[in-house]
Image 1 (cartoon, rainbow, N blue to C red):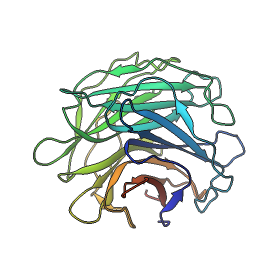
Image 2 (image 1 turned 90 degrees about the vertical axis):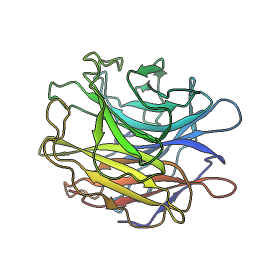
Image 3 (image 1 turned 135 degrees about the horizontal axis):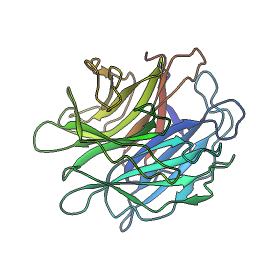
Image 4 (image 1 turned 180 degrees about the vertical axis):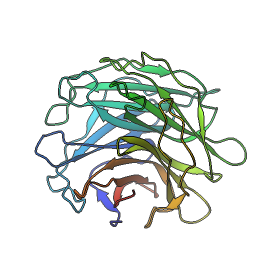
Length: 309
C-alpha cells in the first residue's frame, strides 16, 4: 500500500459524506480521481467535488487538482453517508457522475441519487437530473454509505448497487440493494432488489463506508469498506465477496475482513473506495479515501492498496 496522500484544498470543518471515483475524464490515457464531500454548515448541506488529474502508476496526482465544483440541488440539513460512481449511462461516450446521499431527518432515513450528465474534459456536467428517491429501508441511523455501478445481470445495461451501514443499539450491520437496468436518464427500469445483508463484523461505531465492484474474468465481486471508530485510533477495513450471480447474490462466502494499513486519525467524517488498475498490471487496485476530522478544518487523504485480487 502507499502512504496516505493529502488532497489539497478546502473540506470545511464538518462533513457528513464522502465519495471517490476514478475515470479518464480528459482522455489522455491516465486515470483521474474524482473526490466528493458533503459540507455540513448550519442550515442546508452542500456537496462539492474536485478532480485530481492524471494519476501515475505509483498513484500520485501528476496534473494538479481542479477547483471545487458545487453540485446543484437539495441535500437536506443532515446526512449520514454519501458516495459517487461513474458510468456512461446514455451511451454517448462521455462519462456521467452518479451522486448518492443518505438523508437523516427525524424518523426513518432515506437514500437518494442524482446524475450529472456528460462530464466534459474539465469534469463539468452539462446538466443534472432531478433527485431520485431509492425505495426501501435504510433504518433510522446510518454511519456510512456508498454506491457502485456495473452490469450485474449481464444484459448490457448498468445496475446501481447501493450500500449502507445501519447503526442500531449494539453491533452495526451492512446492507446492499440493487437498482436494475438504468436507462439513459438513470432510472432503474427493472425495479429494485430486496435489501441484502453483508455478513461479518462491522463493529459498534463506524465513521465511513464505501462499496466498489471488482471485475475479475468478467465476474463482478463486491468490495466493501468501513472505518471502525473505537476508543483511540480509527482503522479502515475491507472485505471482498465471491462473484455475484445474475440476481446480485454472493455465490459462496465472503473473504475475511482485512485491515487497511496506515493512519486514519482518531475521528473521520466519512470515506469511500474505488477500484481501478492504477499500476497497469491488469489486477484491481483499491483506492481508499477518508476525511480526517481534527479540531478545526477537515482534511482529505487517499491511499492505494495494490493488487487486491
